[in-house]
Image (cartoon, rainbow, N blue to C red):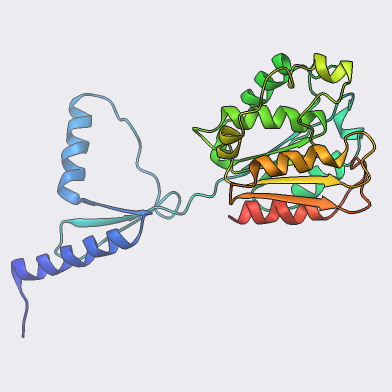
Length: 265
């Protein structure tokens, strides 16, 4: 049968509106509505935004004898930010342990940005200085992965308690402790002067992975095992106890595998 006039326009509208529901990157507006808005803008004497050339930011498509325009926006890719919190005394950061290797490897990945930064107060690593510093670096928690090593892991754990409402994309704890180990410097770092809030910590990131070496001579593996026991209720928590590893002074490939899995998620 032949379809003419309003029936044809109705079918075109139905088709386009259906397509809109299936594509989150497309929006529809009528040519009449565009003209009305443009007229209002000109009447106010201000051009809010100049039209962009087709195929630069979006494509415009119109059907013959229809007052509907299809505007297609390209998919926006968001960069995953990686923040590395170093251990006590690790300065300059780029010359310490595995940090430069890690940053170089991560920056080979598409849409990943790992920027090594020296931290203030590097020899005392006090929470009152480090935690506010890290919080400023976390601009978009949903697209941020925090990696903390040794004293940096303690800082990351306190950060997780504070990001429970807006979780990080991921957090990797390397050679972490939950006590000051009877060490005066660790006691003065302020991280261990109150109980840990394990429930909030678990909520602080969409994925949490803890690495610890069985031969760590600075932080005994029992420290990590205790942390793992406290977080074991969280399905997104994983504990990787590494045989024959010490305090992770050298690069190890497993951390890259974990990072890749978090980025893909």
